[in-house]
Image (cartoon, rainbow, N blue to C red; front, side, top):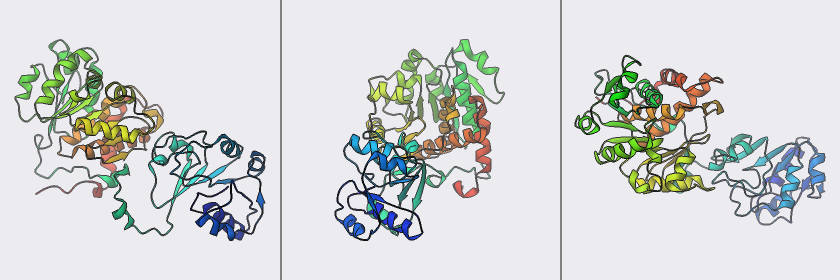
Length: 423
């Protein structure tokens, strides 16, 4: 297949494979130009027509037709050739995949292996690109690391190298580890309890559920270490130690509309999830003052509009509008800070798609915030821990399994991923 316009990758791959004994032919879409023309001059093997029949008759096709910066849809006559292949190894990205967004431009033939260079592109991590790329091999081709100083990337793959988890000082006590308050609903009490268990397992020193009087006994029948308080929100906010709040899980839209403005006006750190996001449908300005927003795709669309093919840009826009870290949940969770930083989380297994998992995630974020972790770091770390815990549990996971599994992940992580305690 023809290489990218200025790369010559396909011709180079053909020549190297032929040198080690592989039977190779090149199917050129068009005459090579630029650097590709130089690489083409060094190819002295067979040339074959660029047709579906040729692609179908061989065991392996190297797709070097288009690269990551494609700005138009792949024409059908090219897609048909690649679709006829039995197995594909793609150079940089499968042809038709937008390397910046993971979206498809036309019909994209999936690759068994994608070989990319220097650093991954967002499209290798974002859906559907992550599936279409197959296994991704990141190859060093001699580009010096100093290039990053010029590029100054603002988007990263989420993993523990990106943040440092808090580690309690030897003199720590329950108040220094932070007090999280979760606004509990009167009907769907399980959501707040899941968030509470997760916040405690993530390291919060104290956890209170602010409960309606009618539901207080339900909450008190849960874990004995869980505090329950039926005082009104204004009274609870009078306690300055209540610095971290979670609003939304199982709360109900009407209750969220009443409570959320009080919390946002208080200047505390607020994790806004579920019903509290839906309560602001069409009113993104109503979320200003939040610390972290954790919408799924439907909730995001209700407040900010459909994200469209460039979801990174959409989540960045939402973070800039609200001044909050925005975590768009999904198989490829995107975490954006108001200053434009983005992390893409790609370690979530499919069995994490279960009721209550989002409540757990909100609780983990709150538990890390309570220990003075910066908001973007806390949201990124929580998303990664959420996925790692789900992977460790495996199929059959239910949300109740996650808090203890998250604690196990924290226990098993090596000390370099924890921040040095302050003296």
